[in-house]
Image (tube, rainbow, N blue to C red; front, side, top):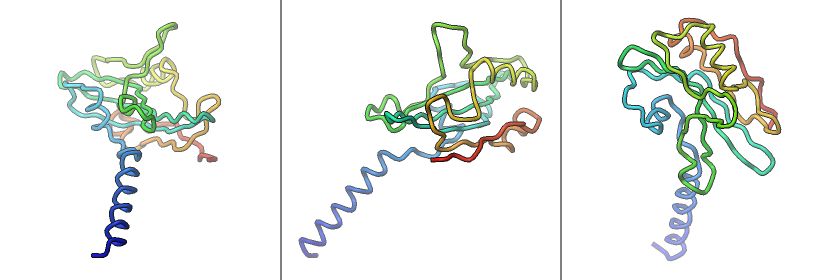
Length: 164
């Protein structure tokens, strides 16, 4: 093998390795609860996902989940991460939190939450089915089949197509 071919292969492998490090792995309910280190999960359901960016650029991914726990209770949770930041710590999912005002990032229920309880949680966690203020929607998806399977009804929500 010529020196040029060896160098070309090495350069191509380096590009693939670097590209692989900055690419977000496929988002699943299972990958999110693994990051959250929940140990009592029976069945997690990914209800909605969005990715948005602003002009800094700050790139944020957020998700809504319904989780059936092993003790037959349920948890609704709003999570986020910053997978394109340089510091690896920000790549992991965290429960959304605001400390200076009333806010709900996660809520447990004795039974599968009702439609009214889900609606209240969505309001209390400040989830929006659009980009946040000063952000542009890169991707937004409601997983209607999983929503219906988890919560027993069709969601009324949808994202408009991103303009990015």
